[in-house]
Amino acid sequence: MGKIPHPDDPEDVKRSDAYRQSRRKADEYKTDPEKLSALLQNAQKKAQGKRGKLKEVWDQLQAGFRLIKAYAKGEYREIPWSSMGLLIASVAYFVMPVDLVLDWLPLAGYLDDAALLAWTFQSIARDIDAFLLWEAEQPAREDTPTHSATPTPD
Image (cartoon, rainbow, N blue to C red; front, side, top):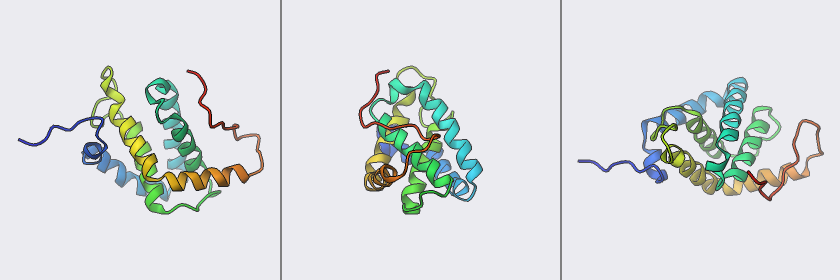
């Protein structure tokens, strides 16, 4: 009998059919800025409702969302596709209603999402840091919220 997948093990999540599907979809999103923007909107909406469950990765998730937005608009492309694809796949997995652990399950429903997001942000930390430096150098715009390194209370 095979190993039972564990929702807080990113290796198990990455081996899941749902994650493999997310990886395939990342390539579609890469070439379609409208699809990528729609994915981002869905992810932001879902994240707002699950902020407490995602507190460990919240700041990184928000930076990832801003990175995806800048990428979709063509404003920031100084990231290898391998890193961008990983980020997009993880966000797509987060948005999927059916993944390794169904999101509506009490307590366990977001363990796989949080584990995969944490692993992703650890894996692309240098790319996120480079984006944050680039972002800090950009002139302030009205449509860009100010970001803070300190988390806001729930």
